[in-house]
Amino acid sequence: MTLHAIVLGIIVLTLLTVSLARIGKVKTKADYLVAGRSLPTFVLVFTLLSSWIGSGSLLGGAENAYRHGFAALWQGGGGWAGLLLIYFIAPRARKFAQFTIPDLLEARYNQTARLLGVIAVLFAYTAITSYQLTGGGDILHLIFPTVITADLGKYIIAAFVILFTAIAGMSSVAYMDVAIGSLTTVTMLIALPILIHHAGGWPHITQSLPPTHFQVLGDFTLIQGLELFLPTCLLMLGNQAMYQKFFSARSESAARNAVVFWIIGTVVLETIIVALAVVGSVLFPTGEVHDHPREILAWTALHGLNGSPILSLIGALLMGAIFAKILSTANNFLFSPATNLVNDIFIRYLAPKASNKRILAISRLMVVLLGCWALYQSLHTESVLKKTLYAYTIYSAALTPVILAAFYSRRANGHGAVSAIAAGTVVTVCWDLPLVHHHLPAWLAARDAIFPALVVSLLCLVVVSAATRPPSREQVAQFFPE
Image (cartoon, rainbow, N blue to C red):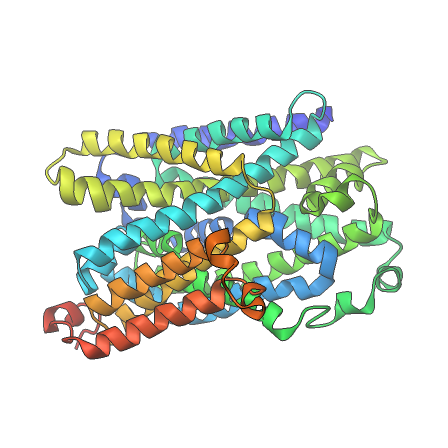
């Protein structure tokens, strides 16, 4: 336990040092929000990778893999499919080069689309931040079970995340991710073969688990697989945190090159995460982790890698890597909606001539306020997997269709975008409310919100756009240059 505590302490001090080292470079709004548009390819790769793989994969995905085996990769596979399409979007996003997704929505559609976009991002991204706090709290409780409760751990993680994020904005977030991404990749690659050996080898693992754990669909139906695949894919395609990284890129070629290595890193790491959870289900089929399977990776790092000083060090580093990944994702998804409130509300409507000093102060205040809201949600979260899909669905249904239409449809207009964002958000938020849920047909009530919300959103976008006047030539020109 002492070794794990030392590793976590070193990680926290390292991340704090990186943040403080970048603070002197933050003097303007662009420095804080998009790192002065100066990020090179290697930094982009790690910050994209670290922002994407967090508690959704390390807790929600691992929980799914513990119960269902490699079929859990349907969730990760949605992200991989989205990444292949992003390769073509990245340079176009960098060419547009604004600060936030609502910037894009207003430029392509109208002010109402911007405001509704802010609301959708706030719902989705604070929910994503909240279950990072849950994951970090779980880890602190596992390491210090008699000192730190899971809820106290959430408060401690929230304090870390708010501090790191507020200090230097995108610059600190991006450069912290380089250290975190390197640590996570190396430790997971080392830990997996060791744990496979401890579990008796791969043949023993396959014999110990149901055959469905190693099948493409496993014990899922095709619809259940798609309910994992689609929210992840669509979130990836419209992810504001990702577009902000592209806006922060040094050039269009840097943005595109980063996507190539991001695809490779994401496929490798998410497959390793699922494999670690599957191996962990053989090593620890019963006990506390069986009742809380979202903890399987941290539990395996704590109890599956010991017996010698080297193994204990690997276990501590793996635990530290998981902890750092969770912090990194929380930083990214807390920072992103804070930029919305500052850039899309404060600067746009309240103080358009505010000084850089005032903008930086308000930006840090927004980080603190949104961090507190995310903490409140975290204290009331029971299932990380369910919270993950809820957050992904809001964004997937409300924003991704209109974001893609901005780049690929000349006919989509402001009325269609506004109706689509509103419909996608309302359907997702209201789907599980008892007042709504009890009045749905049984076959529909059993489904997640992704298909209904997405269908309603797309219908609104297409039908309303077709029934109203097309967008102006000026609106279209900046997305479809001659």
